[in-house]
Image 1 (tube, rainbow, N blue to C red):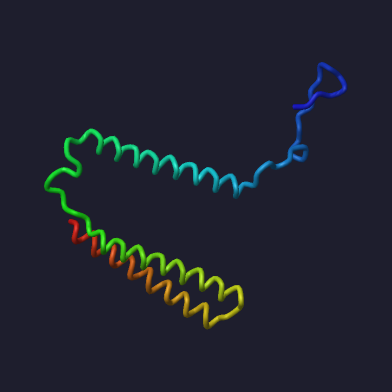
Image 2 (image 1 turned 30 degrees about the vertical axis):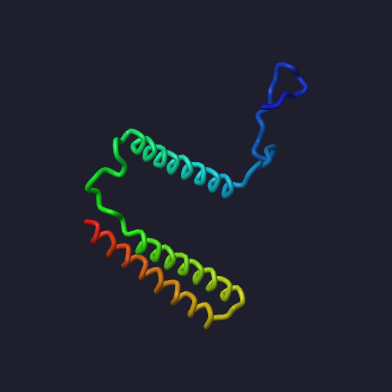
Length: 125
């Protein structure tokens, strides 16, 4: 609403009078990052509260998680991401053979990651 030349009248601003301060994509990504920060902050806070109030942490009898296997699987996931980025680089250069090779590696490493995650979960159950 903007004033007109008459003090008792107001003019409603049209969409053309407004300038976009931030693009929809940037705003959406900003809201996503903020929501993820709040989500993980809540989970970490809950963990810290439980850890602080528990007499012994971790409680006795709890299974130990396979840290080495998880670290290996994380490395496989990073290699898969690297292969996917490499495929994107080959695609920009219009190198079809390089793109297919890198995508094959990314797919194979990603499939291995998912299968190994399933194996780890079955071992924990």
